[in-house]
Length: 246
Length: 246
Image 1 (cartoon, rainbow over the protein chains, first blue to last red):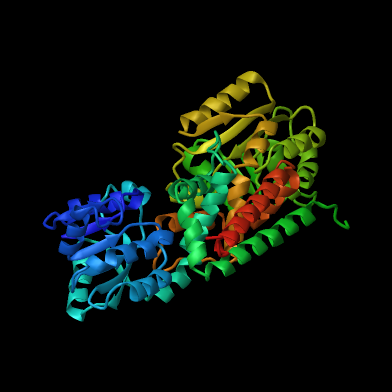
Image 2: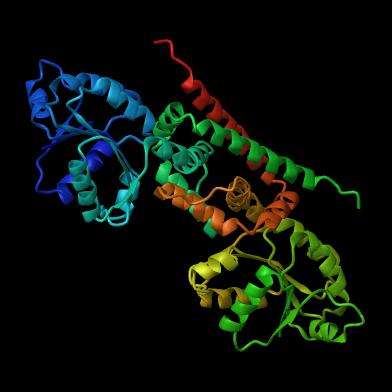
């Protein structure tokens, strides 16, 4: 049985995917972390062979603390947060040794899944064997490939470094466009339509942007470079407006 | 006969479109503005029923000055620059009264045409009867519609105001991405792929960005708002990194 903790946008999308593409597995959805008065949730955690916390990065450690006492030997915990190094460290420090650990980042969310008709073929997914028996990990990785996913093996450190110059940038520019209230016009060009696509794909992700920046220090350099480059080009444009020497 | 002045990216694309979609019209391509030693070009200008300068905005006025003496009564000059109010004023002040004037902005270039397989269906084109007999203008506008274009009638002032919050923004963000040398990664998300699309569609357009800013003062406010919004969000992100009171 696979237990998904969290019923936010991504948790609900994940459940839909599991029920569609892994229909022979039983799945359970936990609304929030269990407490002793809620026996059904504890029972689910005890029975789960795989536990996937689908919760905000900022809540991840607290959820691990709450579920740790109930996880059985051999249960696999899969982290699916948008950043990887910080949450991998939390899994190592907060979960018992008898639990196995996979770091995973599905590089898609509800918007891109809807655009892909909820099919997985060709979607990117990063995975890393954080602490798990090699055969079990290989079976899971190949199972994900069999679903059509483009499975990419990257360490949490490499993942976070690359993300700081890719997804972080689109999340950031999307948030800027939303804040500026940029809207479609009656005379869009192709490049402006593409910019609106960035806005639409990221428009619900301000919380993710904030957490990615907060817990991935490689984003500092990207933010500073973006600010500096915009400043440089802005200065060039304003200078070109001035009357020339001619 | 339609004479296209300029053999840059857009001039070549325009010739290809004319030869494909208006095959019953004769077309001539002029490499640059004529001088008295180059009779063939002057002859072309004298024979042309339609003249389309496809030159950088910054050269537009000089080209008009050079061709003005040779244009015959009733010849239609169509401005296809990316901004419209500045060039419309130049046409009125630099061309003789017996020439008719259309302001036009095809909202597509070589990149978007290639992506559309050089088909015009559904592509946006802004047009305005700057100084032309109504029947002639109506025939041209309907002819463009018959080619499948989405013909939008907007005054040069309205066009420039809208462009400052649409195409100018995608040109600017595209230029920033090029300057930062942002590249595709092994783990792209959908939103980052869309951001790379903006880069790819605008990557040859730094000169257009500069001219659009220089000759469309409405772009000032967009640049300032983009800088301020990025600064605000950057400050929020950095603040969220600081240890909270809890």
